[in-house]
Image (cartoon, rainbow, N blue to C red; front, top):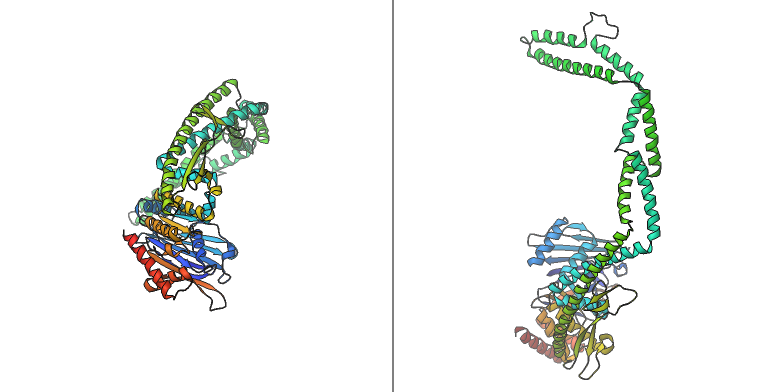
Length: 585
């Protein structure tokens, strides 16, 4: 859960800290006091889009910090993810988050004391927080969102089936597109394949070897300078054998080193230091002997072969012909050939391959059709359960005669999408199945079933959406739920029922509610008030916790705009008493 939220330099909020509890947290305040900035701050903290226009000119940057308490399986998963990314949790298991936005629009994020991409905050937010606001109501009016919502409600088993369908659909579309491309571009593919074959034939005839051009360059250099190399090696060998102008009786270097070693060994008993030097001379003599032998072998192998030199010239010319066409060096030519072989296989347009692809297309189409049929059946089953659950909630929200229906409609074939056979019927298939989902409202018995946006008034739509959100939240999801004025356009008995349902959600979730309804605020486990300070040159807002008498005064202000009215306070205390009994029951 979110234990603490600190907001600095955002909108009308200069610097304030919200200390939250695990139950129902209610945020109230006068219009324009900055309640929306709290939700905006939450959005920023969990990866939302940064709006530089909301940053206060002084100090020129907005900072939102939060402390998450990690618990259970979800907490373990989050902790592992953050640790792998280099962050750390505190000793008490809490995780610190931070988001900074400057007036110039630059944004930075920190998680667990480590700078991280903003996307990490967004990823974290998807797991721990769900925001339900008026914009979310508009979002849920879109058919694609309604289908996604029903899929989430259907449960983990359904989502696993949907994932299997998407994988099969993706494979099927790849084969469909590949087959269509091969048939549509047969001539172009054939021409490209012919060019690749010509290149491969030329490279195969030359048969270049890895690093061959460098090896030949080194060999031709030796052959072109054979005489100079021979002279240098012979002089070196002669010097080791006894000097450049030595006579027959001149001792060689090995003999001289041997004499020096024996001389020193003779005196090693007097001074051990000479014995150590004698050993080093012995090592030098061994090394000189090895070099002398290698020089003799080098001279015997060194041969100026004009025929071999000519052959190398011809070979290098053939290799240069390849590097001019295909790559900068011979290793690059070899890589080009390997890639050409792979691409040539992809360009295969033989009748045998086309027939094989067509069989694969039909096999995958059957799989997609079978999975699409199972998806449709699962959605219709979930639609019945969803409709019943939402309708029960509506009855408690002063809409006892209204009913929400979920229509799962199969999609007819079209030119824009490929089709598959589902239970003997040809249907258009998309990435999410062969269905469209539409939420409809029956306002009262005998009324027509109409799409939500057409069948509900403003107040009814708010209640319907809240009922839907309550049902969604009860089906699982993130542990922290934020409701931003979803009770707009509602009052009276319905407002009390909204408070009751939010309080019921707070038994299993952490709930944050931004509201203007005292009937909802009365159910809070913690009541936070956003208040404006207009005493200075610049208006600022802060947040404080209200309890007991102060809380009754805030509810009185919300009821009648008179925080000090005795009648209003009495009414507020009655509301608090009713809410207390409801929560205990």
